[in-house]
Length: 299
Image (cartoon, rainbow, N blue to C red; front, side):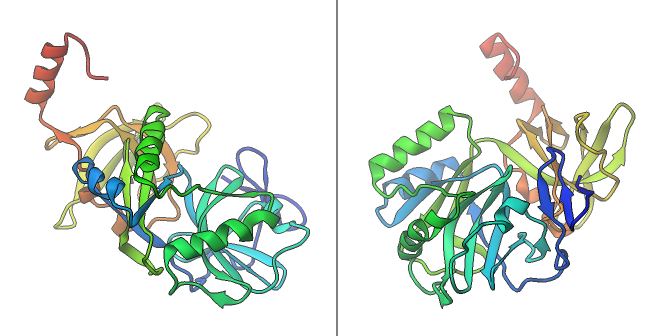
């Protein structure tokens, strides 16, 4: 939750200064490329294919940056301008000409993974491998920006995937190296997530800092997926608010197991809160059998 301060800035929960842009909430004309979720059984094909590269899936918020006329503006996945950290705007020397950079807003930093325009040149029709090469050179003048490394060799992709899994990372994204940029859901960009999460709609606020969350089925009916506790440092979301919930799995026909509240998702729309996000489903009898075989609780 940001609070207004003087001189046109706001602060977030950490106290970091954010711009209070007059453009916030307006359409930018820039929409991101959204990766398609794939199953673990599909991974080997892409990890071994020399035509695909691998980048870490950062645990942040999708952000595109538009740099032009000595100004830096940020957009969300819905294409709306949003406030960004003041440190990004206060860069002493911005690159000349219009630039559009795709990445993730994580904490107060920006992790770039694609370059769509540079020095006024539209790069969208170029292959991702070439756009990434240009990105690495472009970002050297921006101290608050880092580039998410790209692995292209099969052995390096397998190694990096294993490292991210061992570090309990969010997951990774596989990119078709020869593909041009196209906004919207893409089959040239594929994501694999180690941990399950879903963008849910708040159904009601309960006592003791918990909320009930749900997702819409194919008929548009809200399905109640149980309660999740909201941490003390987070504002209680009102009914209808979209929030991110991490979970172990969903019981068939029931609720999330071990749900963890990850925060509000103002960058998402109601049509994103769909039950089709949930792919890890178990029935209670199978879980009980696993516990008997393991001699322990599900972890």
